[in-house]
Length: 194
Ligand code: GRF
Image 1 (cartoon, rainbow, N blue to C red):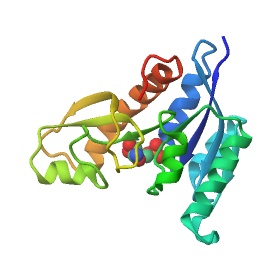
Image 2: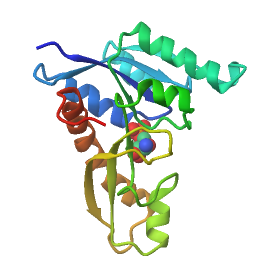
Image 3: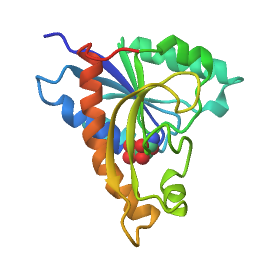
Image 4: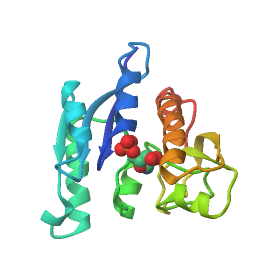
């Protein structure tokens, strides 16, 4: 079986990236993580990737004259790794249309809500403020509209009395780490397409 090559884009902790790396240690897993790119040089996830022998690069958008040039450079890096697919894993930058269309159908994201509910940031805080009783996470295709691409997999968790954004996000994160590797496997096996 030839495994599909995957690049992961991060900005921080990289726990979802680590879940993908762990899944890919199984030789039967259909994808391998070949490179991790961060827009923050200090992202802890970069070290975790390096400890697993995975190539890493960091690119600061502020060093580029335009977002387009920054994103074109990200594409060059991903192409240098010969990636077939791209996973966004806590990549905290809105991507421009050229970049999104370049990878459309081959780029997925994990978002901490039951999309289409709670697109954008601070989802846990907003769910609690609204008195919601259910929350969760979604893996979806990346399309030009923010958090709008078709959902591949979701997981649900209850919102419990006394939850804080921290306790709720921890409960959701456990599920993120399960559904992201599953969704990437479905995509790279050709079981889902945009
Ligand atoms: C996760 O909650 C993910 O859903 C969101 O950003 C967070 C990233 O966490 N997109 P990590 O860097 O994967 O630990």
